[in-house]
Length: 157
Image (cartoon, rainbow, N blue to C red):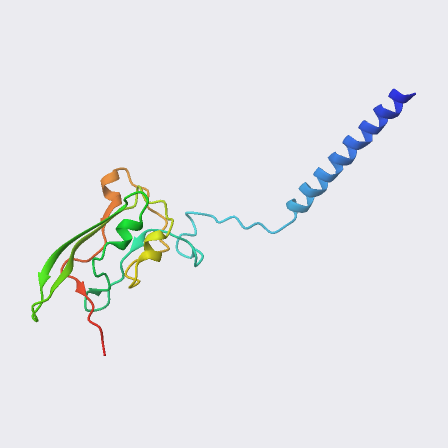
């Protein structure tokens, strides 16, 4: 008799488990779908605000940026995805100052941790919402972020 109760107990337990699974399946079957029809909806597709795409260096209308070539972002990057090339120049008043020559960013080795943007004291770099970065050649993933002929923005009093 004990085996018969055990057999029916296991059978009912299995059927109730199956019922819970079917209930969940049917509930999800009738919920509104949120699948994006990519790439057909590419024009109206909006990424959410906290999305981390490619790293960018914003420039104003006068081709000025806020990077002072301090190298804190380069030091904060765990993979070495950022390379800041700078030179020392002498200003009109005789002081020596670093000047940015090239800001190289390797999108292929970036892990989008945001340590570089957190380390930047002048908010010179930020992540964009760009997400289409598939290429056939890895050399195309190495980008120079500062525009040719750009300079550091002057502080306005």
